Length: 235
Ligand SMILES: [Zn+2]
Image (tube, rainbow, N blue to C red; front, top):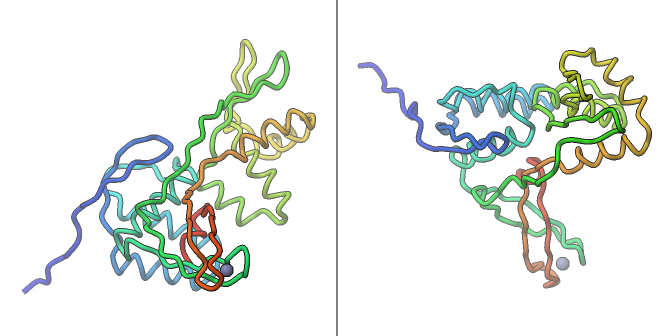
């Protein structure tokens, strides 16, 4: 007799935050979990990030271009797929602001949302030029995490990845068509005031977010905390 293949059919739906498109997925299985665990054990940033994207690719049934996904899309999708695969909750520890006691907190992964700010993605540089911005793709975050030597270099690289087009009245230049070193030279040619506007956009990038309120089990202090980004949700 041939052994049956279990759990191959899609069961759940998820909305991709950046596109608001709904796609179907199945939970990840032991074969995918094994690859994820091996990546985590390696402590190699590129391997971990790649295995997260590969897991999403394996579990999503509808066509999705993973290289087009933003960082927060990938983090949100992975958190939700994990919720249906490993467990609906995650146990983490949060330090009390008053006595520093580590409190065990149970997070319902379904409650985690992506905070989508309403921000204008066009930045006027001067009378002639305007820039349109975009949120960085996950693939470029992998590159930044792996190749950036210092946090300053990582920040410049991240900013370069967020530039979409440079517009004048009669021309649109796609940053994607330009060489990375030319983009960095362009960024360096900006005034501090122009640069600040770009940094401000990048700082408002959507993130996984969840508010937590709890009373410290040691001293009774009322605590409020905001969890942000995927690493805050798993320990
Ligand atoms: Zn306390």
